[in-house]
Amino acid sequence: MRAADADRQQVAARLQAALDEGRLDLGEYDERLQRAYAAKTYGELDTLLTDLPAVPAQPGPASAVVPAEEHSTRRWLLQVWSSWVPAVAVTTAVWGATSLASGHAGYYWPVWVAGPWGAVLVWQTVAGLASGEPRRQAAQRARELAKEQARQLRRERRALGADEAPESPGQPG
Image (cartoon, rainbow, N blue to C red; front, side, top):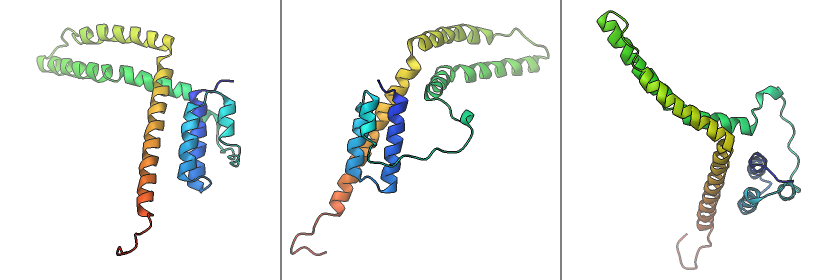
């Protein structure tokens, strides 16, 4: 059965925990992490954890856990709408200040900012949700995170290799 991005992220988190516990060294962690993010099936993911102990279940309410897909959708919606809300708030504040200064409520002109822009964002939201854009962006973020973690591990490994290099004869130590 094909694995989802959330499954790969769970395996990556378990591998990070194993590294933190000292069950994996940096080289093993780096190799397994790369294989985890390249895995297509549950079988490929399972082979990465077979020699590691199972993680005990965390106590707590099940409702506190947010499914990965819901989280990625929420994040995407915030990204799409995040510029509209402050723009409408600022234009409404300007309208309110001018209405207060004049002593009467003038024509609510911010509707010309909020309305058309909001209509475009509604269209973009519906089209994006229908095409699976939140999942695509979450997968892209996961790939970028995996690449960054791999780069960091290579830097750490190079730094450790330089620090642990044997001294040459005749060189002061």
